[in-house]
Amino acid sequence: MLQSKEGQKVPNVVFRTRENNDWRDISTDELFKGKTVVVFSLPGAFTPTCSSTHLPRYNELAATFKENGVDDIICMSVNDAFVMNAWKEDQEAENVTLIPDGNGEFSEGMGMLVDKSDLGFGKRSWRYSMLVKDGVVEKQFIEPEKPGDPFEVSDADTMLNHINPNAQKPVPVSIITKPGCPFCAKAKEMLEAKGMGYEEISLGHDATLRSLRAITGRDTVPQVFIDGKHIGGSDDLEKYLA
Image (cartoon, rainbow, N blue to C red; front, side, top):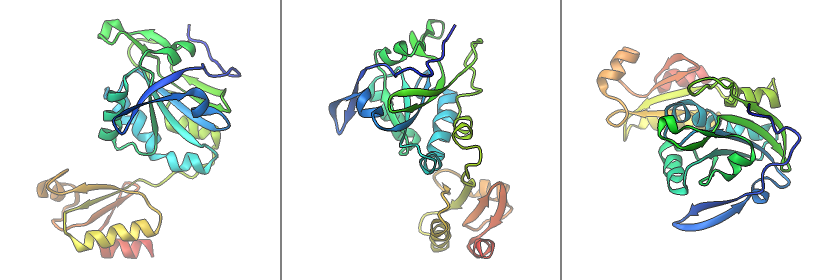
């Protein structure tokens, strides 16, 4: 049975990372000493749940975590440095520190190293999250021990709610644009001026004109969505923000 490490210090490990094509050793002291850190650990880079939900949501809420006293967010996985760096680039996860636990030493020290040989993965980390203050685990959320890859309690929202149930989470914003569109640039400037982060969907790269018509019923850009509501173009956005 997987045991919580609340009240205990994190394992003393040196991680082999890659920065600018050079090896760099990072110790647990460097990561945790004198800091408040959120760690979430998962079975593997590029795997479905990890890529679609787990990492992206922590990346999305990173600014909110920092507003609530968190110095860093660390994603830990039993993968090598090359894989973790490639995954970070693929996910555009610039707000999260990805650490390769290549030999599984940290995961083993946490009591979270499990055998996933049935999937061809070998030894991997069980999915969990924890709040670490000055190297000591204050709170840990461990996924239930059941078949498959449960994802019920180690998510970013659960951790943020633990830290501050009243934390103001960012409103989801998406904007459909096309390259060279001055109205799109104007709309993005308005969103940025309000401090509203957004996901940009570019015609010709992420979507087609047919998709634009199907989603919005219009064939002009930009088209802005805020918190699930279709706002419209740049003039509509200006009125909404006013």
